[in-house]
Length: 256
View (cartoon, rainbow, N blue to C red):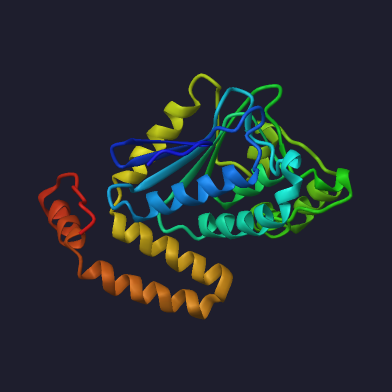
């Protein structure tokens, strides 16, 4: 399926979704609606095991909400919150390949991803800068940044609208890996390929259990973990894993 402002490319078991809304890959209603449909498509595609999110061009991952489409803000805002939440609890690994600046809703989207790889470049900065406009992060930033880097550091970044580069982001634990503009997508693909080789049912079960524990409490997380354990134990991938171990070879997981 094709979209106006989101490019979707599939390489093996990896889907690459590129935000393509120049000049800053900001989120207006049309782009947000496209993204919602693209996410739904890769979610139901059994051939997709890992998703990479990135921005078109060399300067910008996403600048957040598109103020030029403020007339539709009452629709875009709630829709963005809902989609970001879906990414946060996605049952397939999602990698943010941050190719440039990620501000406001752009960083909030990256925070929803399971992994973040960021380029080191002079203008590649990330931050939740909404307070400069007299508003606050509204797409989950107050919660997810705190969850990722801790409350004190998150308050420092949000209250002072701080923008940080790749090195500081790595030190804060905000990103997992630093890359270069030339190698970002190759690095993201290499990481995605390693994830795609892991047993899909087990990966999904881990993500689901962690989300349940984080947002619904440890007792619910433990219950979901047990449900996942029962499911993977009965899978063909489990048989393949143990067989490969005994035969001293690499397993070939099929997601069955």
